[in-house]
Image 1 (tube, rainbow, N blue to C red):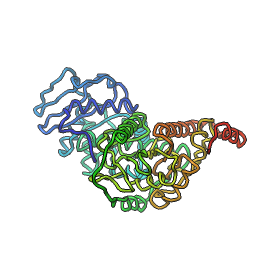
Image 2: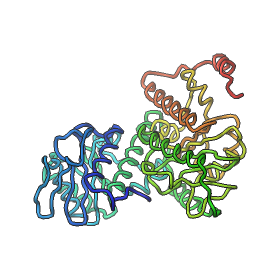
Image 3: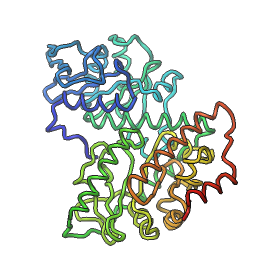
Image 4: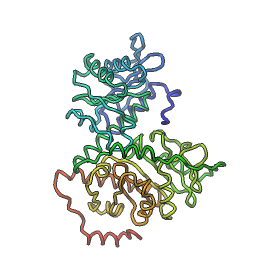
Length: 434
């Protein structure tokens, strides 16, 4: 998995970058949460106590030297004791993230651990998860309890803290952040699914099937050309991916974007690269169904190829996981977009395919886009296609807003949908399907 270039970035800059992402994504408060990095010299770099997370600068980051000397203009985070305890217990760990994201706090206060089999990548990214008993924040006792939990299982890199929040570790800060973001998506997916009905979890057999059937035998071509229009598409894809991450419509561990270039040739994002950090050079060109030499395209590249080949009007495709939409993807609840006119105009009626259909029912899915712009994959993702990248993104936003509205409306009562007659009026007025 490609991550931040930690060899070039100072630890203080890394911490400011990641805490900024966490804060802007609404996963911590101004005063809540703390991050640290243990460098190769045995010095710990850690966020300060009592400093606004929304305006943190590299000069605010504190350094606790290996000999205990504290360097910096503030006090180290009050949770410094458990960071220190984790590093002492697990010397191979080089980064720790602690925060109070709403989804994981919900599990924390009911003393439960999210079941990561709800979406395919969560178990792989998060691994087994521990649960540490409560103690006073900032105390040595809390540090001892968290360290003891990490000691129970050498594979633990995530621990839910009783009535407190979550702590996650990683080989570096990017690794820890990916685990943090993925586990919070997992938690919110489960909560949304439970609001809608009964969550459907993936079996070990289903998870193993996907893992063993991911396509990795792409043919490649040499002599890749990058004319100006091709480079422009690369830049557009990267901007769109970062925007999706900013708006929590895509996570660092999941999301694919492609754009048609010439004929049925297109450009697509690769696997194994955290979505926040994708750049133009990472994008993969697909020409005559083959990938440019030296690169691996998204595992769903074959589906993208079929959609483009069968649907000349489709010029952009997005496959991603959004918290509200994933609530519908992981239950039997109907995603009824007959809520407001915009939702139906942009999405029409959204079909749902079974888990793994992107590999086993590729032809059927590709044909579906002749009459529908959006589809759902059970326990996997939502797929949106349109005539341009910005229009595909717009449809994705509308879909997530519609799903969120339906979930928020659940406690109020039954949906009162737009009638068939009103839908027909919309079809005529807005030339839907033409």
